[in-house]
Length: 146
Image 1: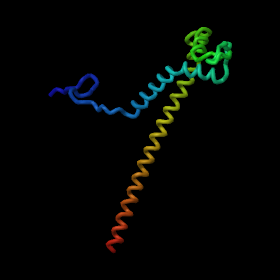
Image 2: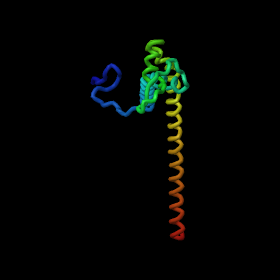
Image 3: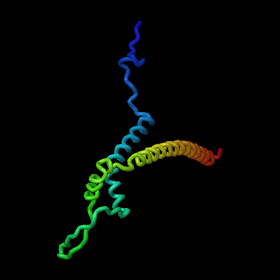
Image 4: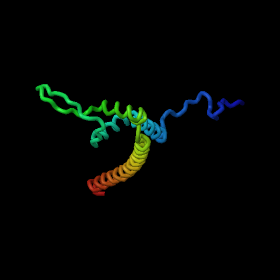
């Protein structure tokens, strides 16, 4: 009798288990986090430079709606254009590698802590449910005077 197996050793026509494992979910979260970090990094980089007071561009003179002359600091996109002009497009991604590593470590640690907390809570649920059963049985025994 011939076996219906393909090259990977799995039987043909048998459905695979479609539920993802914890490793698959962790990997997907890690890759998703790295992608989001890479996309948002230029925005956060420019924001950080503005917050720390890095002012490579001079303020511009403008007027308020009441006609008073004031000085305006350059905006977000002005800073980004200046960084691209000075350092090129790669300048917007300066510091991305450490940020991705930090994000990856954070994701892995958070995942492992969550798994441990879930395991502990399941053990505690088992113990508390056993205590509830013992109390219930003890209470019924006392009510029936046994």
